[in-house]
Image 1: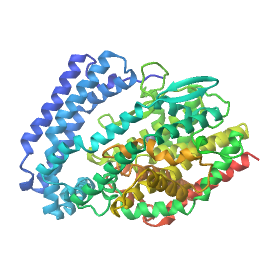
Image 2: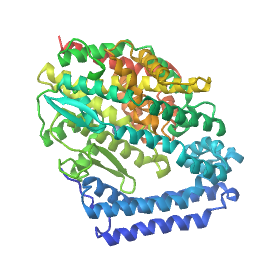
Image 3: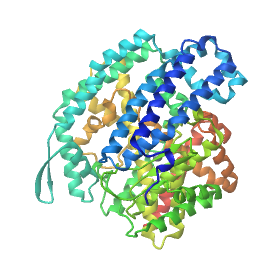
Image 4: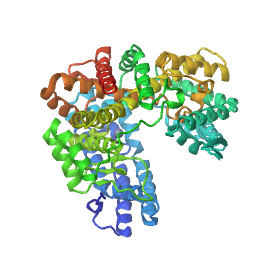
Length: 588
Ligand SMILES: [Zn+2]
């Protein structure tokens, strides 16, 4: 259950690894010396060679860099791992500084000569260059960019820090099973997932009460950060406050609007699911404080070997090549699932281009949830396996919206498997609820967060001066639009917006829709699989192996769909509706 990282380095000696990191910086410096200031005059063939060399330089040092970061994730208390990780951060920053000229000079070249995008000599980098060309017109001059960075330190960055500091220094009081406790926000948030309903309700009430006492801080921080974004939207000549995030996520505005329309037409599904969740929890009706309540799990425990068998079987069934890949992840010791102190919390899959593989970190306790985590992360490794076979490194930069294609798909394959093999209705219900709980929360709650952010920009643009009452009103309006009366909303729920960290983080504008995109895109794919059966398998493989060589909308076109039509998105919702019906049946 532990991974073997030794394949990543020539020697695990600290000195030897530091030498490799130094080489990484030197290679980046040599690359800059060779090409900086020359991109404007280079032939397409030379540009192609330069990009090949860029990929080769990154690949040469990838393994050593991965060794440092993965070793640290596996044990954050190990002083050697910590030193190596710090050395990596320093080396990567220096190497990155040497490479900054590339995007700027290439962007300018593409603006003056857009026909380069169609040049067959550069075909293997087409979409990589298209993304760069889309961003380039919004760059400011070098002096302006430096001025923005300098001013941001005392502007939006300070506002973000003030909000975080303020929130982290508040004290919260909670009665936990008869004992009065004074807690920090982090400790308090954990109680929103507490199995005891009254504890959750009190925690939710207290967070709302304390947050509402600092209304001036939240309103000023929010309106300053959003106002700054609107100002920069004008300076950078973006058509709307949404535009910069669309370029970053490699998606089109029309697609996001179609997706949101599809979600809004299905708001009753939100209540339908939470009514079932109330039944699962044994209560009359969910309140806001029950949204994150843990689901009653099926009591069944799985051994590591059993879990491996179930998950790999669910992948084999879809495509034997996927199953074999999953097996090789186990056989080559690429998964660290042991529960131990010092290990990073949560789970991730880190892909490894140089070795055409991946590494997974998670903690396996034998619950159904752990099976889902395992399936999810192995899905990421299958995605990596697919694009590594066909693409160069520049085409393996998967956007947020598309990064969950194989991972969420894997969760749905696992759900089917668990339902078929379930020994009781309770087990079936646990599997269905496990995917539906995330789906519903993301579609409708993240949907409300998206609409709220949109309305803040609209209000500021219209010259309205916002106070706490008005901002709370914007939140409840967005929430009603996306979630209706899905649950009981106590008065403190008006303040939910004030404790959502990303609203206050500089650079994280429109953070929510990629999550909705990822869920719904994959549920739609799954629906197509259900409709087309085996015929769908090569289509899914083509989609995954394209990596980032095509945009999401071009990938959807290959499946015969337009992302700016609601039809595709509705398929995903229909898939969820069917699962809600199955869940209801298991509960009768
Ligand atoms: Zn994931």
